[in-house]
Length: 204
Image: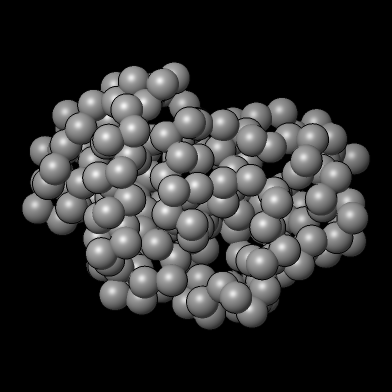
């Protein structure tokens, strides 16, 4: 596994470029978000996506969210109501995953049974630069050990995933909670998971 340490505020462009090259060639990377480290690949690379399911020891039934660089092209990947757009515009970038009806552009492998997808726009320079430079959304699933516990220390992550991941971008230890998951696919918002971020606007 290639391993690079980045400045969290002004990430070195050459390391971002290396990670994007890996993603474009069908590779799998680990990268920081505004909450925890994520395992990612280009959402349109089927083989890389299958690798992530294998790494996570998942059958493909779990919702994997993906990172978009901004709200500008969000309609390519999800059907967004006026209410959902206003809520997202207010809170993003931030530590939230929004569940929305899937658009046809998104591979069906990432759809839930209810034909929804999870979308993130994290408040993290590295993650947003990756998605913007790649030109496609990037899978975002938390880095965990075999017990399902989130790993925060990049050296521990490096040791465990050295033979499974192609490249890791590190910004040091992350201490965040997982993102809050808000379902905006129906008329009424539903809080799926209370994690990082203020969710008071969705509480009745």
